[in-house]
Every structure is written in C-alpha cells, then in structure tokens.
Image (tube, rainbow, N blue to C red; front, top):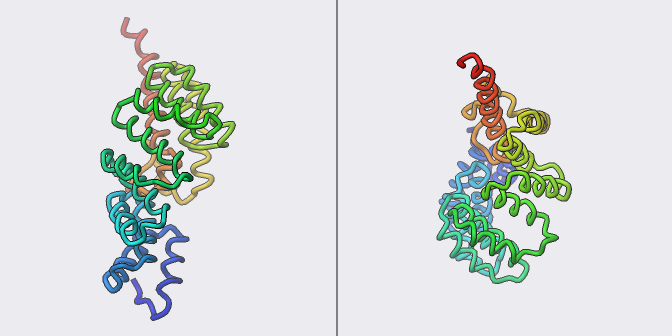
Length: 258
C-alpha cells in the first residue's frame, strides 16, 4: 500500500470503508492503534470493519475495550453482545446482553437472548423470550416463523415469513426462508421462484459479486466472505437450488429403476 501522507489518514480510512475495502482499512487502523492504544475512533472503526468481514471475535474484542473505556455509551454494549453472538460465544453473549440497562435497549436484549436460545436449540426458552416482544415489532413474525419451521409446521412458518415480508419489505434471508419452507413442502417450483429472485436481486444490487459466479454457484474465494455476501443469501440460495435439482433428478430416475 502506498504510504499515507500526514493528515490524510482519516480521509483515507473513510474512503476505504465507503468502498468496502475493509481489510485495507483494518491494516491502517491497527497501525494507528499501536500509536494510540485507547483511541475511541480507531477501536470503533476497527470493530465496524472486523464485523463487516465477519471476523466477529476481533470485532467483539474492539467493542469490549470500548465498553470498558466508555461505559456510558449504550451502543458499544449492544455491538459487543451482537459480535459475541455472531462469533458463536453464546454464554458470553447472554451475559453481555444483561449489561444493556437502557430501557431503549430492552427489546434488542430480548431479541438477542431469543436468538442465542434458538442457536442453542433451547426452543422453548426462545419462544418464551419472543412472547415478551410486542407483536407489532417487525421482527416478531420473522422469529416466530423460525420456531414454527423448527417445529415442522412448514406451512404456518411460510405464512409468517410472507407476512413479515409485507412489513419489512424485501429481505433476502426472508425470501430464502420462504423458499426453504416450499422445499420442505416439496413445492419445488415455488421454491425455485424465490431462489431465482434472490439470485437476480443479489447480482443486480451487488454486481461486484458476479465475479464469483460459476456454473455450480458462487465461488466464495473470488468474492470474499463478507457481511454483504452473507446478507444477499446467495450462498444459501445456490445450495438450496442444488438440493432441489438433485431431488428432481432423482425423481426422474426413480421410475427407470423400477
């Protein structure tokens, strides 16, 4: 990387972040942090960049330091708990969520704790926490749909996800969940319809990801395993598409074996 002139570090870092060049930004920010070990700006931007390249462990480390240096800032506590959850550190994420003592963070705390219990496969506890959420909360139907699907109630789950889509608008992960419900119901044409929408939307909104497209799906090594890629649900969509094609192929071959 070309040497950065004095006084241009801030502009360079923000330009890199704007262009989603998080790894390059992290390199500069770590250099700054060595000089100013308690820099709020450097730690905050580092946490953000690490989160966006899905290095949640390092992201959590940055936000943990910020919660200690600036305990009055509630957002850092939220980001710390979220990073721990994303890193799969579920007990630690639960403990961190109890530090969210601001009334405005209460709903976030409940959602995070419910997600942790869901990932720990403690579905009854997850349901109990979700029931404490206001039903008008836009994420309520989404999360209830996940529990219904896990309970094998695929048709009911599909309706919940569809209702959530009407409230939240188009969300790739929701569209994927609907496709998955149709797949589980063996309604493959509908599942493929939603998968097609995910792929079309993902490539249209993020043409930079098209460089990783192959005939078999998405080559993650070509596009990087970023938060943007995760949010498009492209990898999941391609995997589900392959599973459907496999089922259809086996369905066609089965009569020939009889």
